[in-house]
Length: 326
Image (tube, rainbow, N blue to C red; front, top):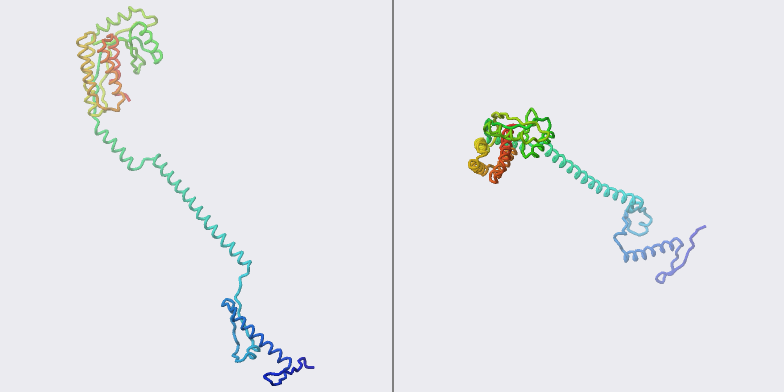
């Protein structure tokens, strides 16, 4: 039995019979036309589907009955988008942290290199520094001259010989209580306590008798002896050498002038002229000689006791001799 019944209709005043199948097909055609009109009004190029026809067809029926295939744009699944975004973020963060770490490590390395360079500069001199030091030492040696220290001799009063400086100080205190200034001269034998000095033996013998008569409690009797120092050679600058050359002559004239006020005044003037010519020096022993000579000049001007002036001369002698010691 046929599924489609015949329907009678009038088209343009003429009666026509349509089967159910034809009616359904015409209904489709009408729907397609309406959809086409609606689609044209709402046309959006992004919604366009790409169609391929397998064969040409001039009418709608043939096209509808033909096989039509179309391609839809491939969509990326949302889960892939999430993983992709996470991977991109991780990459950006990793690169940023990498640059920061490299910068930090570079700063540490630079600090280490600078510290090592500074340490090397402090701990070991450079070639330029060694050359400079060598040049300075060479120049220093070139500018120095050999200076001979003259031998000296006089008669002294020795108040004792002890092995320690403490014992020497005790003896000095005893003489000071009796009114006799002293000085300590150290040599290989020990610490010698000198009480006086003179150019002539008779003069020191007379002074020694005065000490004995003082009856200083606990003090040994002083005795007179000859005292001398040998010549030696030292290195000084030219100006230091020229200045020191006048020392022995000034010292001997002062020793001879002890007890003679007029001669002693003249000797003081010689020392003053000598002190005015003192050169700039880094030699501590020369500075000490200058200081002790100043004490002698002040003592002469103030007319100090001749016994104290003798001690100044003894101290100057000991300083002069010590210039040759290491």
